[in-house]
Image (cartoon, rainbow, N blue to C red; front, side, top):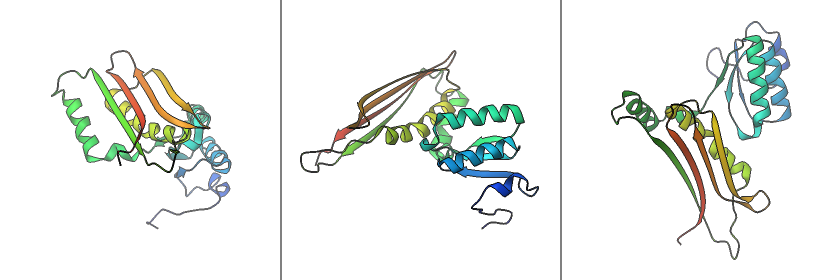
Length: 185
């Protein structure tokens, strides 16, 4: 491991350790969720790798704990650092294109035929894609305050289509769509 970085299995001893300034957290098991809440309550800085398994309740609770304790909560979304995303952010910030009216991100999943059935992704799979993509839309467009979301399908049968629209005062409208389509082969 890198100098100053240690990978530790248990989290309880981190609560009282003066040597630990920040903790990198990933995963969404109940043990991880309980540990990260206690570490945040103890004032440890949290570098969080968001995962759909963590759920909105954990994020909300961490926000409340951060407001109370002043601990640093830093989410890490790797796509933000992709050169194409960085360049897009620079172009938008420079206003070279004029005012941005709408941002749109589209995901397509091409399904393979396996006999008579096609396997559609679960709601959690689609939500996992949405999590990183919405972060990019917010990075490029702003801190949206209104969300409208629709799905076609259910978790038992799978999701074939999903759309999310984001709006906010003075911000360009943003939309995200997901479509599961039949492969052309």
